[in-house]
Image (tube, rainbow, N blue to C red):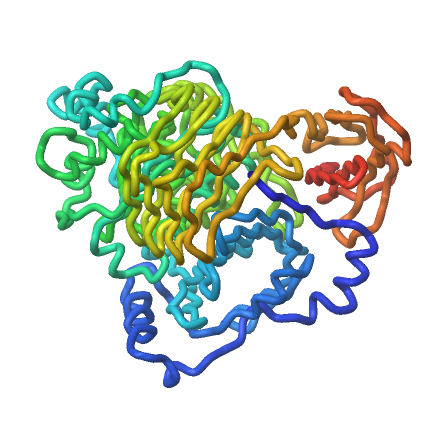
Length: 601
């Protein structure tokens, strides 16, 4: 279940101004105090081709509890970060998304105990946070000039016939007991409402990272934020994370071919794992190359490879974009397509699918936006909003057109009955079923080992029968979901920190969907006036208002009215408000939603 809290109330903002923003996230540490393991991970980080300046810090995790904190960077710059979302993941793992106040920038953080993996973009600078173990971290200023071109071109328009996979062929390769683990279902409920991704990583990547699962989670979160920034209607979710015993080729095309081909003797087990855990797409993290993918959304083509260090430059989302049939910008792709990336002609930014050459003679910074004719990007140095695409440079359309078909490559089982499985350290299995899910009762049957993570989810019932084990040090949760995160008092069981044994433990409840609790404005950005629309799942006392970036209320739409479940619309007039970013807040009882809106004049 998603736990998302958004803080922007005036009282909290006053607290932030008086205390929260004085707290720094990072504390500089001496390299001489590093132990052997920490020094090894630091050396790996420094030798990566995309690394600029690298410093060592510890993290003040307490400030992450605040609604805002000071982001103090190694180059001496500091910024105020307002926490926008907080999501509890498995066990002690948690995700934080923040927005940089007064600048164009976002902060993505994945916490796993005393390890923090993160991505920071502030204007034209990108930083990577990498755990070194033992509470120490490398803060890496990413050298964007070292980002090489994507390997995807005209040769990758379709998978050769000899390398194509078909569901019926993969089923013939699977153990018989796997084929009896459930019945396929075309209904769109738990497990079918997002694109499920299998992410594999090579042994070399596993050796380079202290926390590979957090890196994988970060890649997916960055991509989903790009989707949200751009108006792409779907999201990715992790189905399976696994290490493959594969020695990489120096050719990324060879690595992609071997990852794609189901019968060449290289990583062939990927395909049966994909089928078993109902993954719609497959992605390999490697140490060689930059990134490469097939420009096709077909079942046998949604395979991609990304150099793990290039996740910092949104390459994971870039290669996944190719799997949605999105292309590079016109300077890098001369073919006929309406789904191309975009570079700002003044050189202020480029979108995820665009090359540095998209802006003209001078390279420009890639931002976490996909091109589209209805989207705008705020460029803080000029205090202006700029369009991110046009009718022929519209990556958003490619995602929205082909995404639903990708999500249907594998539909979830109606009822899933999973047999013998062992989830290894630094690997993950997130199993999903439409109605019910359980493990078989043989002993021991389904085991999460120390250092692994995972979940069982369904829309009606999750049962952990005798034979299920979540060993000490693993991270597991069982929860109910029906396409959107559900919130009731008894719908989730988080099992972590000690050994858990299945004893017919069942997670079941009558839940109401939070899909019916939402707010938006249209148009957005807007000039002069906009329409505010929201939906309530139940009767509540409602407040709707607009705040500026300082937390001050600058407009009230609904003031303490008792409203029944249903949909509502109200006009909002900007009046004398200055152009800029504002926050639309919906409070319904104890629930709160915040939506960023943009006034352009």
